[in-house]
Length: 359
View 1: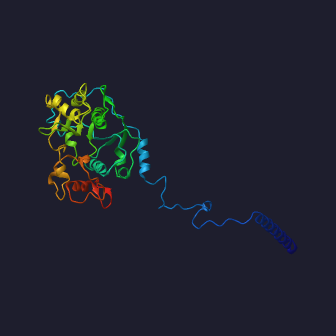
View 2: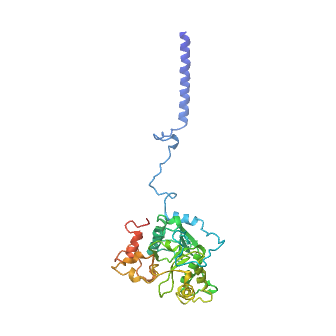
View 3: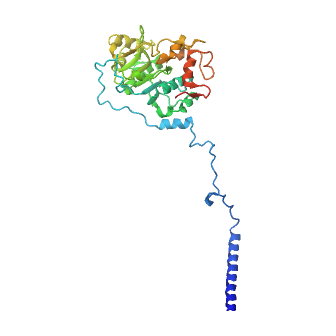
């Protein structure tokens, strides 16, 4: 019995020695083993590098370029087909629809920029005023340039809510109207006069000059067929237009160009002729807004040093007449000296943060 137990133990010892030798040979032939995985991490992540959550990522970083690409990839809005145009025959443009009714005019805002690639500070401020006070469902930039650029455009791209509503629409620069060439120094401006009519006839909404600052929402005028600034003893102003796309005056306004385009007069076809040929005869086609659209001459109110026009907040819009100013405004120089314009800018822009006041 004792001899049998000793023999059995001897076999286990020999087997153990053989296995140890085999393990040693395999170990020596395979080279050094990899370092153990860090504690708390699965062994298959031994070479995994923890990402730096504060590092800029080309995928997740919000940059103007990334937002621009999203906007460019967006499907363009197409207005619904006109199965039956709105019949405005007999419509009362003095009273419009009641406050309990739906809006006639969509909450679209349109800007038009021919040959203008960069936004300046006042362009930037004007758009901020629209975002703050109108909160449009869609904000259209109609343009013949492939892409906007510059610091102020980039600031707009990063402004909360802007990218959600903005749409870029390509539009060609017209060179003629009803076969009449536009080939003099007024070409771009006259082309813009015609194109704004066509834009509103396609989409409807609110059209603003690039330097028309919005003080208050234009919603009260969205229950009219069309509303425009038309002051006493003046021709109508085209800087602010609120219109249904089937507004009768839009068609008649465009028709006043037929056989009567004068390329050598700045405002004849845009304002003088439609006022005298159409509105003097049929004023009921338009809701007439006196003074409150700010299309009259307000330079002395806006830019006079050390004076603030207290009634500016009573306006709905104010045309800034930017091209009539020698001073080029920017973030550094707008605040001095104190002016009405400074107060308007501060209403939509925070100079300390360099950001918009949208809320």
